[in-house]
Image (tube, rainbow, N blue to C red; front, side, top):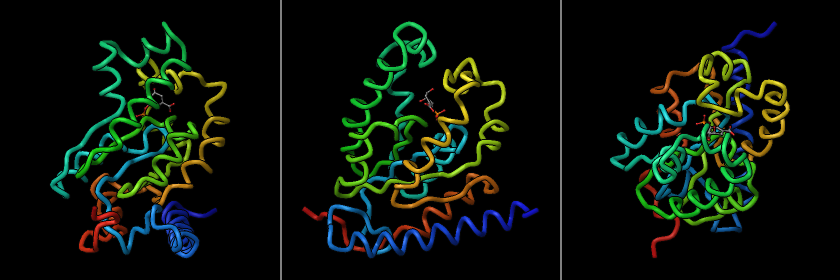
Length: 214
Ligand code: S3P
């Protein structure tokens, strides 16, 4: 049986080779990020519940001297209620439309770290926006489902998708290839938030020219 360290090393190697392939694949398309050679103006964090988006987002923003915004917090503040309540009263489709519109608005900000909710990646328009907008770097914090279950234990009342036990694994599997379309994918199961921030910073070129100087 492989241990966790070996697992995460293998994932890191997979990530590096994917990164290399991506920079080759996208070299003719200046609208797509090439993390090592262009400087992002905003970093968007995606990943399944419990991957650490809201925890390490503020740490990353502080290191960069940027602002941090959590999309779920904005949705709750603007709706004047909790996400669980929006799901219960209006259903998931209503939440997803609010989520899409909120991300489209916020993702235009500069010097910004933006944390998405775990399901935002499922919306095609959101994916296209975050993968193609100049200056946007989409970072996937990859967790195993077991990590989600361990880290999010007891938060079912706050997270309706976590409470939907029957569909949790299929959602996870459905989303995984979508998350992995991100410009960078980092396996974070065995990392502290601080270590994950270091990995993100080391994958991004902060001294390079802007992706889109105008
Ligand atoms: C969701 C994840 C939650 C929140 C909502 C739906 C999902 O965010 O947006 O409950 O579909 O996975 P976190 O990933 O921050 O828990």
